[in-house]
Length: 439
Image (tube, rainbow, N blue to C red):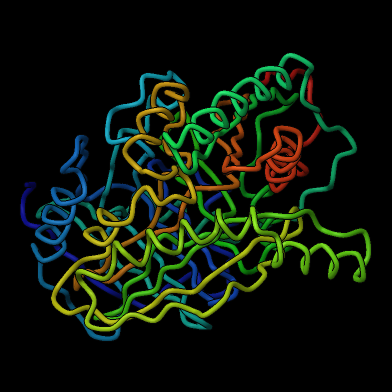
């Protein structure tokens, strides 16, 4: 534990600034950006006043205890502020990822930023946190104030270039789906979420703020996020919440089962109706609903599960969604709820342990893809978003992932098309491509 932390809250001097534009124009690392336009919530954290890293089966419990202790280490000055919060995330696996691309992203990392702007509705406030005798991010604050006056992020133009899957990529995918389908037919597994990755090289270093500004405009119900770790950045525009906790009220849900979007409203409605009626997609979806329900029942005083799924429509696809919410029977933090839920069948499979072992053997480079990113407040409240529709940026290299749930009746060709559609969520705004490598 570091020296005693000191936090102060004040009205932000960035009221008129777009926090994403400030994040993109600055050079402070680590940087944490999070925004949910539909809920009028945005955060920007710069620098580190305190941090912790963990791995292994107890990583969530260890992180929860450490973060809560650090958040209560110093008394807050002033009233009406929003911070301090801890921010961070974790990977799919509880072991460290050996892939060089994820070198700056351990199995789990949480920290308290030196500077944290939180915008709720029209109000924006800054929390400054520092160790005793520290500067509290004075240099970063001056930089942020300077860049806030510059031109903000603009919508990225769509590119006509798109790297399609290679014949080898298609064959590898078909072989993997065939292998999993055999295991499912033999009743070894009910579902496995397989993922594909693709690395593209752009002519110029990627501007994550421009890319996310475009995604934010097209996908206002999604959570935009970016973690700048120094040499690399992990960004995304995810439609899926792992869990949110506000006091004793929690919200989670199931997002599984997909169909393409239509070329016109009539076709869109037909495809959506077919998705709702599809036995294969309903089986896949119901596995997630039951797993989330079962994980939360032991800690819930009340639990509400929607009677039937609804459609969530995104530019690249439409999905089955079931809302799950309730009230806690006792005390828990958002990280402790994550320990119960992660990984859900929406990103892993059923049975969970068998599916997880298979994924970790076949896809050791998943890193934080299908992990989660989010924040936690001093009372344990917070929110974690599943890290989907994401890209890891390393200079001019950008690595994208997309997954598909394989169940009884899955088609390799259909699931390949689904992963391509999901990759397009951010792919369209990456710009001109020199080279493409798929795996």
